[in-house]
Length: 115
Image (cartoon, rainbow, N blue to C red; front, side, top):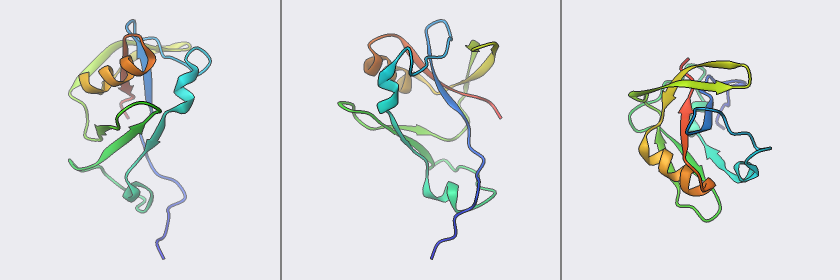
């Protein structure tokens, strides 16, 4: 039987508009239909670190599956704002941007907070 750790260190991802403002499910209810999966190993080891073969898998109705590498993104998104916080985050790239832009029907970026 596999042992599951009680907690795991994971990043926080957000979808933002072209101005870097975070979308909420209140404004974009379709976000409630997005499903995400992390690698099983992330929940089995208390000090798990992603490898080059580790992916965040994202699914939504009518969309192809999106796989986002869990390696640290190369691009920085400046001017990201969530409620009263603003600053820089890591941009998950053009493929994720295109996926969320198509899904929401407006320019969007997937960003990750830098631990």
